[in-house]
Image: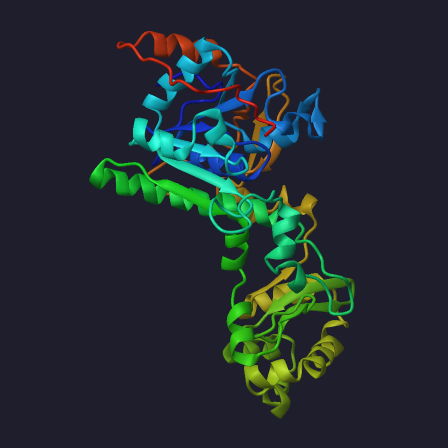
Length: 410
């Protein structure tokens, strides 16, 4: 299959792979966005009349959702009504030619529609069938609805986020959705590699709660070793010091001196080399145990000069440090600009919106062109071209019995 997406043609490591994207909102669309950025052809299967829920999410550009544009760039769209024999037949033909299916419904929805993993494993054994849900398709919680906020709370990250004397906090982005999306993309690419050896598709089952547990860093091991429940530590790292924010004359900035050598370099850069010789701070373990005294000693120095002064001094010394940028600062950040990380997307109205680009840089493939906006598809924009393409093929294909309406609200 090869139709125009409204964006300039691009090649990538997944060129030639076709993905049927039944997903909506964030976890699934973000996963398929990554695949599209890597060169896959992604065809978005949408609900008749309304499409993906995020088409109604703000902010809007000439009544088009910027939210939708960001995560559905470079994809195609077709709206299907599975009550229609023609659409059932069309979907069956698309499944025969696709390599990957991605869905993020609650377990059981795709089975009721007649397009569950077990049925497609029999009829389309080449297909990599990927499900993203709150809790996966096994276990006692598998039937429960799972949203980002739910799995952030249940998976422990909220208990670790925020300040010790404040309530638990949600991570500032949709950490539950985005982590599941990225694990799903890894699973899909792995399954496609496996298929090159045995020609067989694979079921990829991603549970958002599983992904949260996998991203707890050492919190689980710390509890198992210390028998002490890890809690919120504000902006500092529980196992490294200094690894947090510090007050300067005009605000706060980050110093991340993660080992003894960096701590000595930091002390020199701050103009107080004797700090590294203080017996309270001689090792990282001592610095962690004496963190309040360490912060007080460092801030007695850093409060005397502005952030820019310290960033320049610390960078010259090779000590990891950073200002705390607000989002507006990212658009003109010289490093992000140099890495082609600010790109443009647009809808049918052709009014571009700036967003983040593809962070996966590969020497063998050209990066996304930041100067040319990537198109997000209009609802059902590619129906006729997809239909014409499939109907030009050969062979009769009988639609499967027992399917029902593709109710994408389920």
